[in-house]
Structures are given as C-alpha cells and as structure tokens.
Image (cartoon, rainbow over the protein chains, first blue to last red):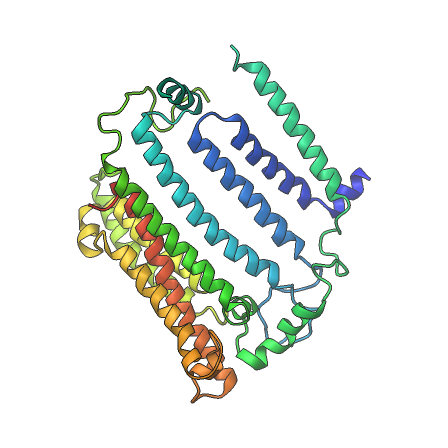
Length: 125
Length: 115
Length: 143
C-alpha cells in the first residue's frame, strides 16, 4: 500500500505537508505576522489540491488548439482552474486587509507579540 | 520555561499525526490523472463547456470563456471584493493615524517576539 | 520601507525594466483569448511594475503616478464593468448578456468582444486596487 501511495497518489504527500506547515504556523507561533503567513501557506496547499485533482493522463491544457479539435477527452476540466483563479485573487485581498489590521494593532499596543498584547489587555481591563 | 521545548515537541508530534491522518484519508481519493474520477470524467457541465464554447464565443482559451462569459456574475462579485478590500485598507489606516501616538511603549519591533 | 537606496545602477535598471514589464502585462491582458492569462494576471503585473518603481526610485514615482490615483483607477474599472453588465438590462436582455448588448454583431462575435472589454476593465480594476493597498500600507493611510 505504501508503494501504491507513492506511485499513484504522491501529490497528496506534498499537499498534506504544506497544509501541516501552515497549521503549525497559525497555532504555535506567537507573533501575529507569522500567523498571517501561516494562513497564506495553508491557502497555497488548498490551491495545489484543487489543481492536481483536475489532472488527467493524456490531456492537454484547457486552451483549444486546432490539431486536437474539440473532443472532450483531450482537454482538462477547466472548472477547478477557474475556481483557483478566483481564490488566489481573494487571498491577496484578504492578506492586504490582515496586514493593515496588524499595522493598527502595532500602533496601539507597541508590539505584535500575542502574549504581551493579552497581558496589556488584561492589565487595562 | 513554560513556553519552551516541551510545548514545541508536543506541537511537532501533533502535526505529524495530522500529516499521517491526511495522507491516510487521501488513499481513498482517485489516483493522479485518473480519467474515470468524478473531477475529470465528463458529466454534463464540463462536456458542454469544452464542446460548445468555441461556437458560442470563438474563444480558444476555455478558462477565460468560462470565467468571464458563462460565470461572469461570479467574476463581477469577485472584482467587487477586491475593490472593497482596497477601500477598507485605506479606511482602516486613515482612521488609525491618531491612534497610539501617546500609547504604550513596548519592546520588540513588528517581527519581534520569542519565536 | 520608505527610504530610497541611492544607487545609480539600481535607478538605471529600474528605468529600463519597468516599461518592458508594462508592455508585457498589456500583452497578457489582451491575449487572454488565445493563451493562458487574462485580466487578473495582467492587472497584477501592472501593479507589480508600479510597486517596483516605488520601492527603488521613490519620489519620482510619486510624481508620475500619484498616491491617490490607485483607488481612482480601481473605482473607474469597477464602474465600467458594472455598466457593461447593466446596459443589456435596458435593451431587453439579462445581466452581462453580451449578445444583446452589442446587438449589431452576430452572437458569437458579440460574446468575443464582450469578453475582451470585460478583461480590459478587470485589468484596470486589479491594477488600481493592488497599487492602492501598497500605497495605504507604505504611507499609513490617506491624509
């Protein structure tokens, strides 16, 4: 089963590795900026999962070419590519808003360390 | 010391378990490039897009035709999301210009902290 | 982040490379029909050229492309895309119905040119938004 896993389902090993690195960054790191970067790594893992799920042996990219005609077996499924394109742009927008929120937090607390921010909040409450 | 090496070790072990669990779950998915998988076998919509899009839009690039013509409404919504995100960046930072000028001094810069 | 590194080598290379990046980005936007690419990818490359100039050259970039021009471009792109979608409603079709909007063309050609115009507007929109996000973060908001 291990050899079958390595030969036919090898992309999932790397997708799972990126996912786990992203989750580790989001949970275990104390700095808020590193948590945002962990979220970005997690997003990249999901994009890879979608793209490699749409792969098909013997098929070409979803751009119609004159020598392959219009048969539906010689082209990839274009729909996961469309979804990932939308998701990448939305991810960039989310990262922009997250970093601007981090800037406001830094200005009002003086630090981006999660533990020290919680201490300051507990002192002032 | 409460933070230290024990917490990191527990974190590594948990992440290793998560990796094994995900890969074990992935053995149930179809193999790479399988032409009979549900994402690649042609059900109704993908067959329609591949076979009929050239005579309806004369666009060889299927991804652009699907994104802007057949699913143009979703692309419109997503473009609005990008503009609203840029606007909200500008507004968040302009209201915060006066915040924290007199505020608490802390140690560490934007990338400080023990980890 | 807002300091300028005074190096003649850097200034010369940036001045030579930024127009090439912009021309290539326009090529990617307008060839979205025939090769992978389209509005989003070209818009991101245009924003990257402006950000490259801002990081390396500094004040000259703010003279040529002012700080408030980013969000204005994004708004113009979004408005034009919305108009492209709303006009068919007055002519008897549905939202973003390119066949009814460019009624003087046969249906397939109308869809072709409708997709082309939508790609250009999306390119403008993404260009303006990403430049506005960078300007907001680098200067700390509008005055």
